[in-house]
Length: 371
Image (cartoon, rainbow, N blue to C red; front, side):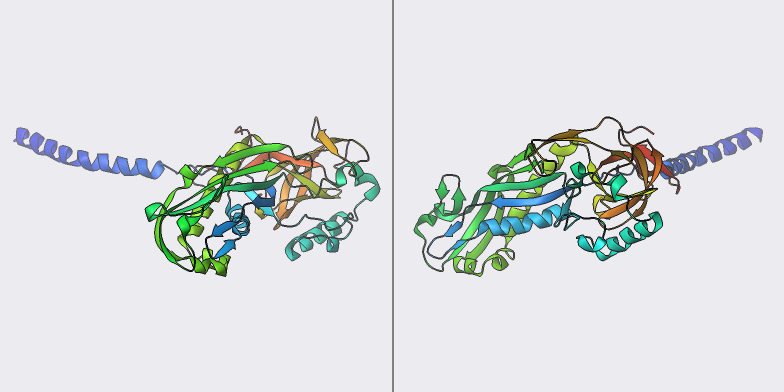
């Protein structure tokens, strides 16, 4: 009897073993928390110009391909995870005493005025630096480029478009003909340059081999007369956009070595207004370093050729208190004997990050990865 009892008990234990293993597996899965992607601050850039030859449509028209490339690049930069595209500089005049003279959104104007009321009037004598004032409107970089080739290839050796050596003749095509296109390809170069010195920060080339796309579409050549409105409705627009996305992604990777930075817009004693808000991914609680740089010019400061600037130690450590559309209000948490000037350089110190434990606790993470 005892033998049977032990056997029965052993069978029960054996039967429970797979269930226990399953439960342990579920518990293990529950403990696995997906590690969030580290938050990056977007670099502020301005749009230069994408140059391109005219696209000759045999017997029909000359299509302004440069216009299409420029229009699409605006959208690609706006959607980019690495860049914050700025259409207008923050200030529309040399004075910062009135938010009315700025190109800020209505929401940012309200934030700016509230900070000035809370912190008192801006002390121009103590906080204004002519040498740095012109830095307020500077983006980190200016993006521009050129379309080197764009080719539409059909059957029987039909090729429409252009290369660095010139335009294709379309194999003798003329008139409003319908053609069957098999694939399209584009070659372009793009670069980011420093706003004042025009020194190249990063450059990338996307080749025709990288962008070659099967489209297999019939197109009436005469429709090119309608301009971009027609082009955007064809598969050709996806070819050009994908090429621009590759180029912008390449620029982002090449600019990873460049430190993120922005500028001080105004000083309110215990607080500063800085350029950059939700558009650059700043969040409340982020900590930043502020530097008064020593600028070098060939002549009059802000009125001659700029050579460069440098700073040794931060004059302040600040914490983001209020985030606007394109500006943020930061409070001083550490201050040296020197006040931050208008146009002072601001860099990332510690970024707020959601804890990886699944709780609501936030951690500050050094930009270098240390906590």
